[in-house]
Structures are given as structure tokens and as C-alpha cells.
Image 1: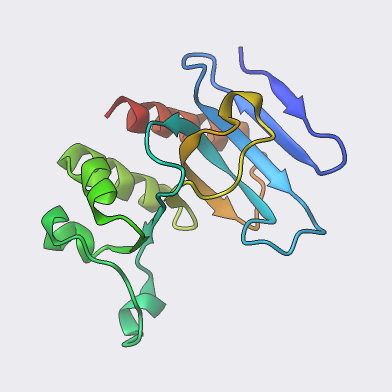
Image 2 (image 1 turned 180 degrees about the horizontal axis):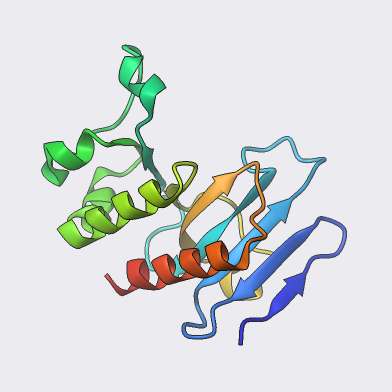
Length: 168
């Protein structure tokens, strides 16, 4: 069974996946925070990449397609079809390639983004040290900014996506 950890002071909730103890659904809100991630929810799990490495992938939207000034990093080896559907930012192209090179990973990401276009995938995005199992670890997560999900079916679906992504 999943369990909840409720934060004190700054509101946060962690739901641990019952089938894979390293996958967490996390909701976090800090109304006093001025940082990049004051309010988010999503699925996160540890990975063995450097904590200094970062990438962010999200689905390209209508505004992105019309914006001639959009700066996006392209890892051409990922293929034109996949690159044409995403916006990518990174500080390490080889890490992005290693993580996204398989077509099943790319297809799953597109499925996740189609499930909810607000979702984004990030390596070492939000700081998750308040979760003991993720403290000082590199993490991959797909999450929504500025929103908490409360629908248990959607949370379960996101946890299932997390299991699939981790298994690739």
C-alpha cells in the first residue's frame, strides 16, 4: 500500500509507490518561496547521473511553434520526429542522448505529454532533499508546476508511467 508523508511548516505530500519503493508521487508548495519550483506535483525517482547535470523536456505547444525566437537545444541523434514535438533544454547533451535514445522511451514521453500537456520531464529539477530516500541523489521526474493533483486515478496513472519510464 502507498503511504503518505505530510510535511510540517511547508506543505508537501509524498506517496510511495507500493510496487517500486524508489518511485514517489510528490506534491510540494511553499508560498514564501521565490525559487523556480515553489509549487509542483509529479512522479520522481532516483537515477545514477551527476547532480550537476540538468535537462528539461516538455511538449511543444502552439505558442512554441509560432515563436521564431524560441531557443531549444536539439540533440539531432534523437530524430527529427521526436525533436519536432518537444522543447529541450540541457547542460549536457550526452546525458540527454543516453536517457532518450531508445524509441520506447521517446514514445512513452510523448504518451505522458499527451496524457496531460502540463507535464514536463526534468533531470535534477526540483530539490527533493525533504524526502529521505531522495536526499543528495540525482532524480528524474515528470511533474506539473503550479498545481496539485488530488484525483487518485490520475495519481495512479502517473505512478504507472513512472514505473514504465524507470524500467526503460
